[in-house]
Image (cartoon, rainbow, N blue to C red):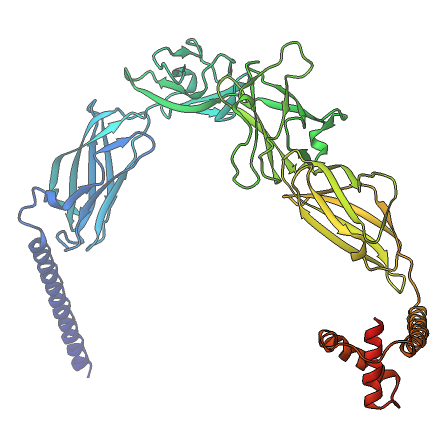
Length: 577
């Protein structure tokens, strides 16, 4: 048993040694295979890098403020993951060098290194060499390279800023300017700068502000003699590294003329008291050369006393200036308490209505200030100088009903635009209510007259009150104190009295007729008894018409007589006659 167990142990040992040896052979073979595979991935042209795969983002870099990006395009896995480093070796213009390294770059990506020149790096043309360090089993196998990439490092120009208290400045004021020189590579006091001032018309005739001194601010008084317009400040700064390494900046400002200032305005209408313009909302002015508006204007100008005043009045309808040219460019009054005094008269032909009065002050450079006043141009109302009734003024006139009333007018109007006159007669009706009777006619000057018959005023009132009016074309009117007149009524008889009077006349005439008739009848009868009965026929024929009339007369008084008696009586009457 012991012998068998010993043999088993020896067999197992041999088997284990075999297995271990076989495994070792396999591991070595795998390492060899792996090495062979790695060597197969290394490019055959491993001595250079394809320049088309390398990029730099700029050709010029300013020191201290800009960064250069150096990039290799390996997106197609041109170099394997065994690439250990990606390097950019920078050689400056003074042959000093700087190495930039990207360790263990990833496969299938862009490989980049960044470079920001220091303010201490030398400026000028700079070269770059690109290296890709390839390793295998921890050992450098190859370093393909790309030479002679170039870029330039530049010095930063010095800067100078300009700050002003205003970009618009009036003459007789002061402009304040601050200067801010700076440079990344140099201290401020190592810089140099100068400031020049240029006027608008002659930039060659510049003024050196700082006179070579290192000033950081200045105050420049703008004199009254300085021309108005755009001025320019030019500041130039340079450092100490490179000759003519300068920077220039320009800033502009406007010199303005001071406007004249209207300090006070007074109005005086006719001989009234002066009033402040600021206290007037609307100024009422009448038309006419004899209607005076006096204007007093006080004004000032810090630069000059050569001021002018122009006054204009706009027509309420057309908007045109209605004042003559004599109201333009009025000069400053000499030895007066006010700068300007002018008398304004509104033309009689101006339209009536609300409009504007403008007062404009100019200086010698046509800079102006104006004051606008609302005004109302008023029409002159007509004047009724006199009004007479039958030539009487102020006294009561009395007429009879059959007489005429003559109303005459004496009127005037500055605009000569009287259109008509009117009288209004006041009376009381049956109920004691005051009524009006109005009569009007066109105005024809002093010959204007209104005629009314007294009998046409069929009113119960015996005394009448009359108001007289005169109207112009603008609707204004004038009147006078009322006057009175009276109408004496004709004596009136009662109608019944007239009737009794007529009846009495008729009765009286009847009795008279009867009496006369009876008297002559008796006479006729007496005469007939003493006169022969026969008469010549020719006499009877000549008096035929008279006989017929006599017959009619007798028939009316003697109805009982026969026809033959009547004929005989007629013959007797004819004979008697």
